[in-house]
Length: 117
Image 1 (cartoon, rainbow, N blue to C red):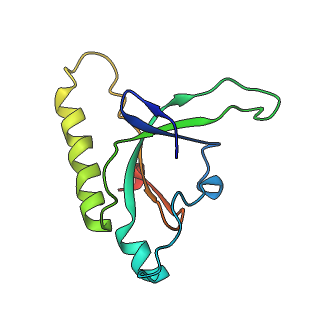
Image 2: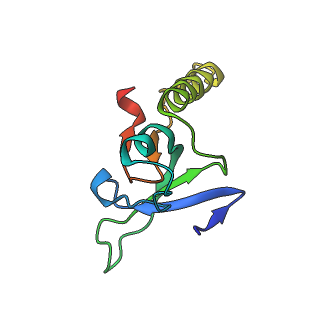
Image 3: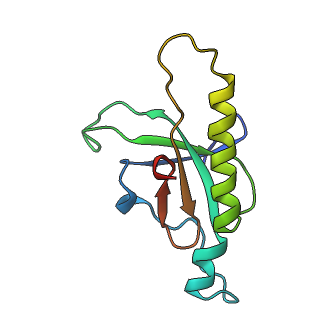
């Protein structure tokens, strides 16, 4: 089980999709293709850790809500909604800095960065 901060699950990686590991084992009732369709959660970039000997460039800290994994289309729609909601809350002062989201499959470790959606 992963750590939590303010009710969010926390995951660390070096920021590249290749370092993301599956969080849950593949259930026996799902094939790999089915797992790629239904095991998605949404992560938001919360910041980065300081550089250390083990991680010279630090690690990215990703937060996700404690929700059940959803299918691909639902996850894409939710990321789009969250990005639009954040844009509406921006008051127009200063430079707009959108939050960074990613879709992560808990069964396969696949990642889709939200910036390309």
